[in-house]
Amino acid sequence: MAEVLKDLPDFPDKNLLVGPKTFADAGVYQISPEVALVQTLDFFSPIVDDPYDYGQIAAANSMSDVYAMGGRPLTVMNILAFPMREVELSVIAEILRGSAEKVHEAGAVVVGGHTLQDTEIKFGLSVTGVVNPKKVITNAGAKPGDVLVLTKPLGGGLIISAYKAEEASEEEVEAMVTTMKSLNAVASEAMQEAGVNACTDITGFGLMGHSMEMALASNATLSFQAGKIPLMTGALRHASSGLMPAASVQNKSYVSPKVRLEGKISDDLLDVFYGAETSGGLLISLPREKADSLIRDLQSRGVKEATIIGEVTEKQDVCLVVKP
Image (cartoon, rainbow, N blue to C red; front, top):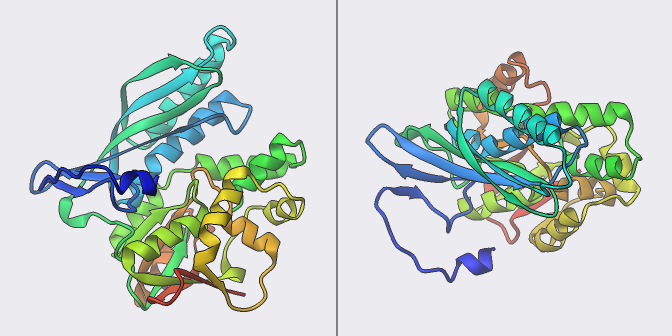
């Protein structure tokens, strides 16, 4: 899409604080000195069989971009496509119920939506949030000397592939669903209180893809300690079985030329890092002196997997460096 967007006409608007030609997670439009709208949308086909869980995951995933920008979700609209003659309406009702309950948990409200007929189910949300224009957090502010904090473990795409291949255990799937249904609200609140320089959420482009975007937007290089990065149970095992999703293979092909490995890191572990995620955690860049306090705060609020996984350096000849 970057190739497409670069040639689109540009119509500047002084109130558009964050627009489509950056690497940002959402658009930001100022409507008053104290209020700006944060707008985003996302939708995807089912990744689990339970329609209620699917609705919950889709809602959490769609609202995540607002949290990454330091905003608060306010209203949502459902985006729903399905084969009307092939799917029982009770299934659709469960998807919408799961989503509505997750939206309510976030303190937002469903104001409507749109449906259309398609060959398969697709569901997600268009989300409008609010943020103080002076407190917008983007992925463009990472500074050399910052440390990098990740709030959820990686491996969701691999567990999903293993689940579809009937190779994932019940415990692995249950843990994955629990992680994906978890809102990034608490992590967002904690990082705003701590005062951070940059943030992005880890979704379809994987840790490496979204980190590359942060590096480019910040004109810096991000350096990771592979052994510090939290993984979902079973992710590494399924990577070794060759269950890397097609989207993850595309991520690796696109991002890997901009990555330098310093030391021995297994191909399986790298595949997890490149893996596409759904409703992943926040990747936060903040001053080193604030990092330990943020980790303690996150863990005390229930974000148990939050950990320091790397640092930001001056711009090098690559976007990303991975060390053992």
